[in-house]
Image (tube, rainbow, N blue to C red; front, side, top):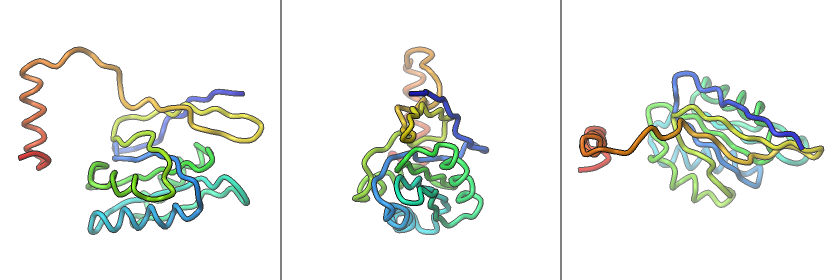
Length: 160
């Protein structure tokens, strides 16, 4: 078995969701979940097929984001993995809809942080062992940090 550390290419620190699914139907169902949850959603998604022709399947509403998803999915080449890039929205807007897709087995991360993926490769194929999402902790939250966090959430409309 060989271990590989792959950095997800994400110019502009777009929000992304990286997950694991189990059926070719995932491409259409993930597209419908995205488009049905956020009107005018701008996204691109790609899915690594794990049997038959083992193609990277893709869909989306933004050609640049579809291409970015395709490029990253091919770099991952891990069976049944999907990646979704989105613009002008946050994963929190769609995460429950994505998790509710019957084919979705796991969400590895939902973030705009830099992401590294730990892959294992055998003679059969590749799989995701885990992800490194962002950076390590630098300290403990102070009262000023609490106030800043609460202010930010209210400023962007996620809390009243």
